[in-house]
Image (tube, rainbow over all chains, first blue to last red; front, side, top):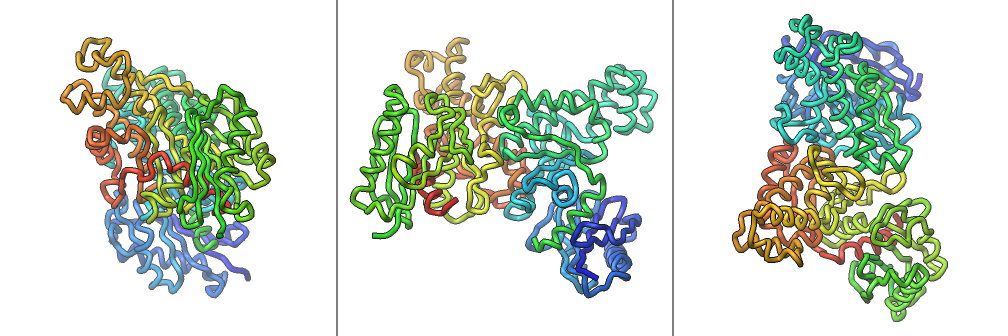
Length: 315
Length: 315
């Protein structure tokens, strides 16, 4: 048996654990509810148990270590999560060292979007490059920057908070970070739902109003595809804001590849045309070079791949 | 005699050439008018002659190479300037190889703002860090990113075009790049002068109107310091746009240090307070970490230092 690593994606809803070979094959995988209500001790136990389960038949001796992707801000040196709205009980808890003690292996803590970006670089849409940026469009907008094949961390580990680039300086929506007009507040799945409710309030769409009680970005998409002009304009706006953010990133990094992932990617055919129009308009670097803006490939497994790769490459 | 390198700063107005020791001491320095009207051949000859002059007494054998900082977009691999409004005759000309042939030494071509950022890292305000961003506030707004001690180039050499981040998506001023509302169009010395003329046109400032025929950002600053509220509000706006751009960069990089340089730095006491207010508002990373925003130290020598350092470190 050859060396392998475990990648963990600790989401607010699901805890996913997988063992990966050095060649990127998944040896074993499991998913259980995160069950944050049971408390921190129970959660740490279930992470340790999950690790034990996926490694049982592959030889504990060959396990290089465990990488965990966590939604929130990471203090890299300390192995601590400092701000994680969906996993509040873990804030300022020395998670990395606690897990290392439980499983007797090296543990690396990483921001989930950073891990996803690295996963795409390893086995996804970024296999051919060493430099890329990933934006994940979900409840929020996450960001990960891969430079020279490695995650760009910054000096405490908070680099890549690309959802908090300001794309609407005037009258933008309030973001969880305290700023107004962040990319996350203007172009996430949450922003799509908020815009849909605003359209209903203003009496601008009967089709959207029929879903007022169970609105999701997927629902807005369906209504848009069925021809509702108000729903379509929501994705138009989302695309323009994404384009503005991407243009800034392209002008800043001049990387060859920018990937979009996350649940809201399903609306690509509606938001991508205005997004690309805005990027062309606002980035001469895009106009002058073969810069690619593409869909991520690994879906919600990207973070698992990346978390394992962090450990395999010793970053 | 020990090894040394030559740094060249090829500006639209002045051509500056200096020989630097490995410890950062300036061995010899000269400055001549660029005289672009005399044509490309004359310019290349004067660069070669300048190099010869500053190296004459230091031993040609110890010269490691020559670095040139040029305003414009660089195709790094080809050693070509592709877009340089102030040095139009050099566009698409294989400048690096031409000079290397003339002087028989290794030549490296670099964007002038990138070179300035590296210079500040070597011998200026960034000596203590390996990661920093420099914005130079002059006729335009230049940008340079130092990551892990090296210039971040991107895949063709166009990274760090930070003057072209969009900070005013609605009704911003037209930028030379074709976009509206770029940082360069809203917060450069040129933008300050444009805002002053607009204030005069609208009849909002008699004090500014007295300088209508010879307006410069320095003049606007004097009028502001003398108490003119309209002139003060121009630097207030400049500061807010700078703050928005800096907040985006801080959220993106989480670097420890962001430097401001260039001629418009003289107005620091007027634009810095609104700038810092905007950064605090728009970047939780700034609020939560010891991120520093400071003045660059090397003034218009930064590019010379950086151009020489590129060669000394073999980047």
